[in-house]
Image (cartoon, rainbow, N blue to C red; front, side, top):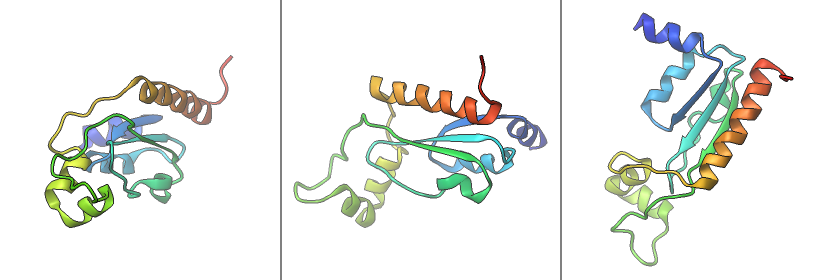
Length: 124
């Protein structure tokens, strides 16, 4: 455990998919940046604003993905997620492989550039 804490404490930028492992970001220094990748079709504000810890926070909703196979024609994702545990787990990414498109990769690159500037200052 202490090795994990030290690894995170010494990081300037963390990038991760929304989920339980992001709880480790509580050990980031307050000047660090967190880039949270949100699986397609899911939203959650648990880590928004860096959890009030002074982190520079970036949220990237992944633009590529598949709809839940039991999503009814007139049902919204939000309704499906609220009414079905299986649907919530699907959009949260628990039961599927997540993939990213070119748009997502460009956005991550842009967020990384901003994070580096915020955390480490302008380079040049």
